[in-house]
Image 1: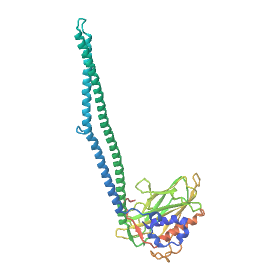
Image 2: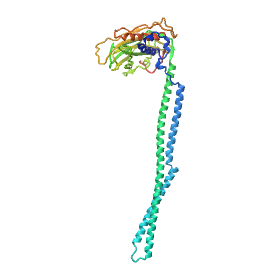
Image 3: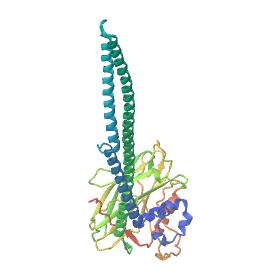
Image 4: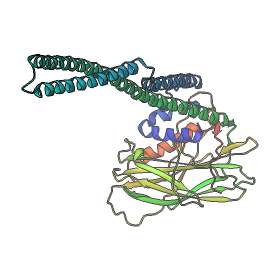
Length: 428
């Protein structure tokens, strides 16, 4: 965590707990805000979780493969159900042929009987009648055999078909299990990768003595003193290296804090600050550490302009806000630090639809910590916060915002700067 982010946290806390911040100790600079004290799984725990997810996924894949093989086996000629079905089918076909032949025999016997001449003897008539009766009896037996064979054939078919349906259902369930196992594995791998990335970034965090450099200045121009809810305003942030040496990396810092007119209720979730480099028209939201991409490098006497935009949600109530800006630097030789002043530009928030007319630009209210009574990193009590924002007489919330600014600076006074090297982008 960088010192600037700690200051931003202190600013927000100061509005609702100003008395607490008046007695805050510089040791707070090393402490994490409550929202960040939640226990996170360690890398070792995440590695175990990822390994377990991999085992579960492998088992799910194996189960799916086994289910597919089981279905394929049901189609093999050597499978018992296939053998039974094939035999029953053949038996049913034979029974059907026998029934057809028996029925034909009945037809033939009846034709013989009916074709006897009147001159036929009694013995011929008796023989023909007996042959017909025997043919009819055989046809009945063949019919019963065919019915029985058809039943067995149907049973064999049903048994095989039901087995295939059941196997297909198992495959479907196995595929769902595999999909879920893959999602779990992906999530576990991503969590592990993110933890390792954070750990790697933490390794890049370097502590150094706070080298005050007031010649590294951050100045806002074009930010109006009144911003109407539901609108966006563009302004400019100029970062200037007024020192006599090049700064290898300069990290512009920006944080906006706002409350309703009472000064008690934060509406930070309804305000947003964005930035855009001079070479790009794309607006990017300031990250959750309140830093923009590094300026690499910033030569002695040089400056860089960063386009900024403040957006107030239309649902925001009338209130007050303050935009804080600062700059930190880190050099390749291990030195780092920043400007000890926290620039605060106060503005009013007018309700949506308001017509404030022409307004002046917000002016900076520098706050500089009185460190005479502060023992850096000792945990002893700090002196009351000093410093105020530029008075505009905007509302009763002004003292609270001013207190927030002064308290935030007091919190960080004399503390160790912790600057993260960020080479993900550059303004120059």
